[in-house]
Length: 230
Length: 230
Figure 1 (tube, rainbow over the protein chains, first blue to last red):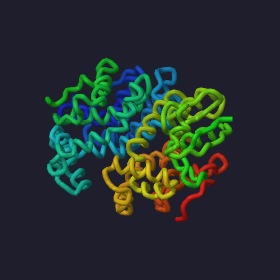
Figure 2 (figure 1 turned 180 degrees about the vertical axis):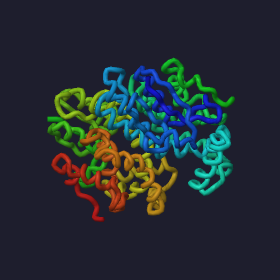
Figure 3 (figure 1 turned 90 degrees about the horizontal axis):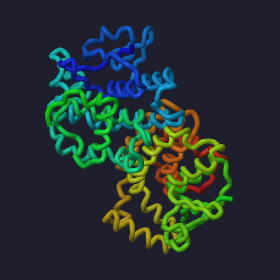
Figure 4 (figure 1 turned 135 degrees about the vertical axis):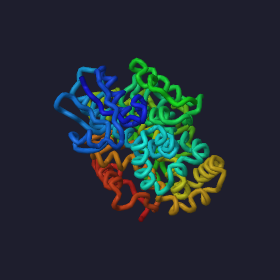
């Protein structure tokens, strides 16, 4: 069985990494069984075998692969007879743009709206690491980074316009059925959903309806995770 | 031979529509011959046959197809044996996101930086239409919309980050070879390139190097258009 090192909070059932959610949804899309191993920010010793210090890391027997994008390619290449994540070479190439948009635009917009709430659900030792590293990166206190998120919500929702416009033309980012481009963007929204009671999407946003379909997918895998009450 | 109604300025050789450039590059990608018919904003009577008033409109015998996205699908479906624009169903679906990103993020960022320069290269009758319709949309004079573009250039270049990050992972948005996702984004940059002497890209930007490869493509089709001197 596959094993996936999966970022966790103080509660080992709190799994919140957007990149790990991409990998979990991709593994489920392929219909593969996986054991997810909760891993915390400061447990770098447990990842020494992988040559780096971040999750997701997928382990299959004696092989391992780190990085959500590399994991998606590895799944597609090693289980070509299972449902495709990319729908061909062109899909793989164009999904790279979706991936880069999520990494450079979407995630940087979400992080300042959830960063303190993420911190609050970590173990004390991980809180100390998280606060130190993130405050150094932003040059501000976590409290100040997250403050005022209500005022930033409109701009955040505008930023989702390419997703919304795509979903006006087709039911999924992957076309008629969900595929890896969906899991990329979903991972980011799931990161927020499980980390904070602060709702990023308006009820009547088609992106929320699409997210609901993703939450229902693969036996409700992503809906099963406990969320802060809204 | 195919015919394409192609947006033109006062000089019939000045072809500047981002959407028409998508179509022209897609037709060239398929290796098809096309006669481009210069069309101006106010010549709606010439498009009555198409049921609407915008270009590009592609005519093939008794058939016609309007809208760049529909044209790309039509080319792919009618010439499946020619080089693929999308690289499969997954590519077609994921290219929709690139298309929507260009339409909702990239083009709206470019337009205010080139809008007066676009106006200045139109016939007087088209200038009057263009000024009236665009000033109504923006609620400001063309001069005021374009003013201060030097200060907006940094934010514009930041906005290209998903393109830049994708090109750091693969030579083209379409993967190892150029494809429709490249033509989508290229069309927008070509729109600016032929409309204004104001250069949007830094010389050392990998996006500029990629644009150069697109300008060289298909016999230098896009490079052959006269540009304002820089």
